[in-house]
Length: 219
Image (cartoon, rainbow, N blue to C red):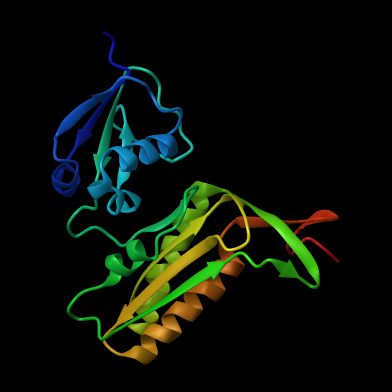
């Protein structure tokens, strides 16, 4: 029998899955589909997966990337000492992933922000939002903002933004800021959000019952 995909697990992911490797007879279409399949297969792994990167044939792959038949896939958990995540993803967001990225014994205050899709804009009912990003640049700019804001306020930050189609109630962005005291954590979280909205190349189309428009492109 031909194995479609071999999955390798390391460190905390290995412990959560209860195995170091396994073979999937059917190849998921994309990395996002693979994440969903592994979460269903290993419930204990589901909480860790949003903070794991996925490598396909030894190359880190975004969630929209295909998973070809015969691939070797690795579930790569967060690396000790690694920088907090600043990411653009096409999957549901978890506030836990940014909170855990900045937490620690030196953090006297951890402030979070979750931006969700509104159901109405200027009296018009929102059917959905469509987010688009220049992803490599967006992640670099987001990381730079986090570093600069963190240095200015003595804080540690993490931010993840979602792209794709979102409906009212979905989380579009999650941010966490940790500092020894609450005031700099509050200031850092707010400044990170405001700069993200101004500087990161992520675009939003609002789709209404009677039309649609790109936010910021109007008169």
